[in-house]
Amino acid sequence: MSFQPQLIFVDEDIADHPRTQRILERCPHSEVRVSPTRQLADPPTQNLSLTQGKKTLWLTTHKGAWFKKCPGTAGQVCCNYYIMHQGGGCHYDCAYCFLQGYQNNPMLQYFVNLEDGMAEIEAVLTRMAPGMLRLGTGEYTDSLNLDHLTDFSLELMPLTERHRNVWLEFKTKSASVENLLKVKPNGRVVVGFSLTPSEISRQVDHKTAPIEQRLEAACRVARVGYRLALHLDPLIRYPGWEQGYEQLLNDVVASLPLDQIAWVSMGTLRFAPEVKKIAMQRLPNTRIYTEEFVRDSDGKQRYLRPLRVAMFKHVQALLREKMPHVLTYLCMETPDVWQDVFGFRPSCGHSMGSLFDGRLVAKPDAHEPMLVQAVR
Ligand code: SF4
Image (cartoon, rainbow, N blue to C red; front, side, top):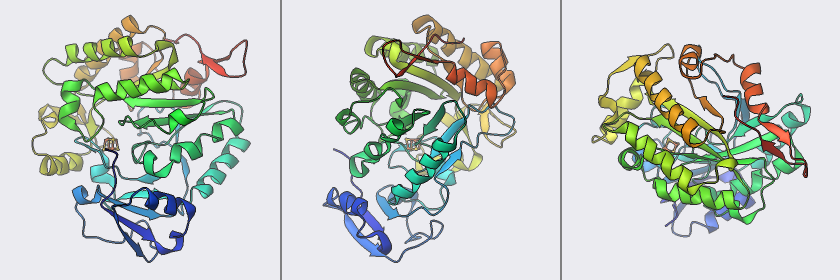
């Protein structure tokens, strides 16, 4: 059954907003408390654990910037990704989720004043220099986990009709694609599915859609014309991981149209020390933290570099064998690791931008862009 929060806080100044009303209508069993309007850092209650917060939704307004460049990490290759906020928090409960140590309040938040965000982004896209901008919505939440309540995807997608210089990506561990199936996509909307071998996903991706359901959802959206992205992130070491990732990619090849995959990202498990501490208290059976890790220059723990490179090379070899025309890139890795894995070191900005831009050519019979052969 689709998620519904147990408790919903509503800022009083947006209690009558049509988006608020729509969400409340879709949550007939939730307790609703309208409370004085507050700042994000000052939530309507301080007395919730993270686990309770995941059952609580706060409908509020966003007063800061809606649009920003993905901050990346100093010393690591950034892939020129941009982010739009829709809210924060997530009712899924992945054992490695950075939000456990990042959020300043444990609740799910949804920003009801989306019209302000749309205006801000439209202005950016109108002023932008030639090129394509990749815009993601799943940085501080899962892009689609509340979509059945908010219709966020339906509201955002017309942006790609008005602006042909944006690729919009919904990144998810859900199978929540019902809204996406209601519209005919225009070729610039990408649905990104995070994938992990089932045996490890069952242990760490708590409350998310099982991998088979994500693949089924990917197949459904691809069938009506959406582009796909696959995020093999985090890559996780466990006994038999080599076979696990091979089986996962076999399943991808068997179930998805490969020519609709826009890109595949890879990133190994990484976490801030406090995330491990919090996760081990909340989810004590978690085993992923028992490997040996090093503290990297960004303060995050990662597998030792030779282990990371070995994982990337193994999975990259599988990708080249099974889907040779798909573009792959690394998330949050150093130029040295890129060199070891791909044999070249991109710089942030221009060369990474052109790696993605170079994938777009005009279809001879239509105005829509299509992907060309992978650079590497
Ligand atoms: S789906 Fe993403 S945002 Fe949600 S708990 Fe998992 S890692 Fe965190």
